[in-house]
Length: 162
Image (tube, rainbow, N blue to C red; front, side, top):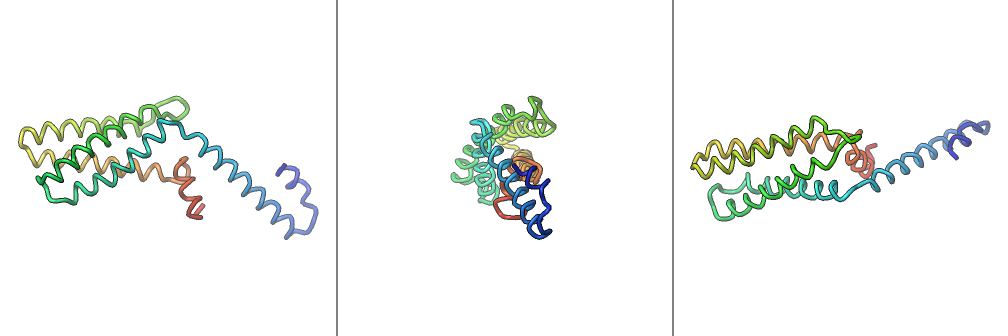
């Protein structure tokens, strides 16, 4: 449809430009619609868990350490963070793993090391591993929101920056 409109732009240049722009917007909305429709259950679970991890982890890191609230929210965060990391292994680009899956492996190792550290009363090591896991989550989030990525395209389009 749009190709025919673009080819027959023999009308006034302003009108032709408007038609070409409308076609580009239509194509973009079709691509966006296709991307939204491709959210599998694994992607949905991963996004929900990642968003929850970001919020809960921020609260845990900002709260007073050693309190009942810190310990309980910390346990919830570890569970949600592990869900985020594990669910990423069902999300592949063209059927293959990518370098970002190495970050998921790092997060799982960091969570285990942090738990072992706190049981051994090594608070300093626990803090380092937990911060490392949270930073890994934040780095993955930044890369996810790049405009060339599926979620990034949806977010940037929704706010009108792409």
